[in-house]
Every structure is written in C-alpha cells, then in structure tokens.
Amino acid sequence: MDTRPYMQDRAAEEFFSRLERGSFQTTRCLACGETHYPPRIVCPACLGEDMEWVDLPREGTLVAFTQQSDAIRCRRPDVLGLVELEGIGNVITRIDAPFEELRIGIQVAFATWTSPDGVALHQFRPLE
Image (cartoon, helix red, strand yellow):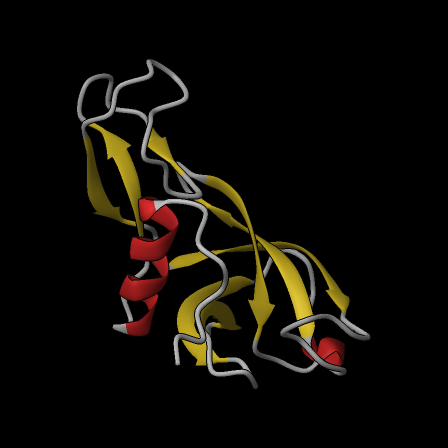
C-alpha cells in the first residue's frame, strides 16, 4: 500500500520518493535558472518545463517555531518550525527537539523521519 501523501503532480511524487531515500532536493528551471521550493513541473518565473533536480541546503536557521497539538501527521508534543534555507527561503518542517530547548536563530540540520502512518518526511535538528 502506498502511504505517501496525495500527489498533485510528478514533482511532488518525485520529491517524496527522494525523501524516502534520504535526499532533500527541489527543482531548478534550466531555461531561466530559478530554483523553486516546493518542486515544480513548470517554472512559475518563465513557464519553462525543462526542470532539473538540485540539492537543497541541509543546514538552515530556525526563524519561528510552535508546539503542535494535533494534526494529520504530527502529534503532541511535536514541534513545527520555519527554517530559513539560504537561496531558497523559509520551509515549514518538523523540528526534532524539545520545545523548551529551542530558540530563534539557532542553526539546524536536515534529517528524515517516518510519520506514524508510514510517510517519509523532512525534519530539522539543532546542530550540536
């Protein structure tokens, strides 16, 4: 049984497939050079359809965080955060650390995790 989230397009399907293999990537347009997150099948900047997969930064800065009380894939006391990735912008992600130990501005690193329903997703952990 496929446990991945509903896929809107080939880019989303490929993104989750790559996460399952521990890869954190997105698409870049070969026509104009713009990198987009989340990944796209069509470039919103130039409407080009020739995309390549590129690595996303595996380290970033925690710019906001909250404790999740209940959601589809996250359960209390999961922490969700906004991580700034250089050249990409902000990514909403799970933060693998106790809420009380976090502070805005700390450096975090990419990791994968498997949700209770078996979906491979991204998360970030504070750097030691």
